[in-house]
Length: 338
Image 1 (cartoon, rainbow, N blue to C red):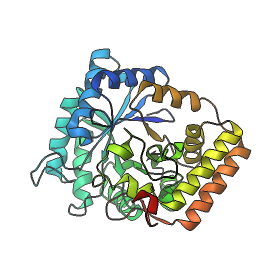
Image 2 (tube, rainbow, N blue to C red):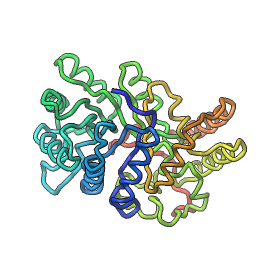
Image 3 (spheres, one colour):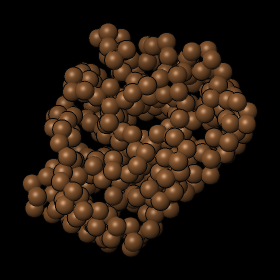
Image 4 (cartoon, one colour):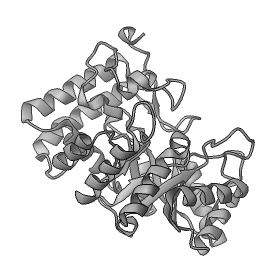
């Protein structure tokens, strides 16, 4: 299976900081027309609305077979004790519901959204193996796993002769570099595709928020509930991050390079990285990414970007991943962001 070297993320389809269904359909059409064939969603994105919007577009447009479609299970999708997790019971129910919303007969790549410490990994893999034999999924992946858990999963698949995790997805960008220390080289060594999300740090690397610690009105930082997903402000609004962003955007301005290009290229330079995931809530966002990604920045420019990234990582160590399954910084929040 071959995918484009960037992937369209859809976690903002149908929420207050995202887009409505007509806009989502236009975004999908623009992405596909621009050569992107890889689309990422989850059963937990906005109570399933993201999957439904994608499914409606692909079914009504007849473009399902032009797309490698990835979705996820594990996050809570209801109030019940079995409405979350990576148990066989939940996975089977989750896949049937995702197939219904996506209006398709198969899921091309099915991720476990995060590690479920309460379920033996062999149970998860056996469920995935059975679904693969049934033709309901094509490949399996893991998301936000610690490296040792992915290693255990690969070992289990090997000794039990089960379909394995073929991809790992997690946050990875200049301001969240923890994935590159251990997971990326491990995944490359074991032929697991690395699919990083948030390469632009949820827009932080565009410099739009400045150094004031005040989020731009209408942005994720402004509208997103900080108690969910780890809290973007607590993750990114600190003095070291603001300084790194200022240096990064200055490099882009000096060389006339789009920040999107430099951020995507930094992530993509790591061996084993297959396709960074970018989000878009406006058609112009997709067009901007396609235009930026149509060319590469010269190596002399990227050497400056790497220097900023290395300097930031040296003073702002990241733990990948802590208990939540996401990589957070250890820096104190800026006084301006309080």
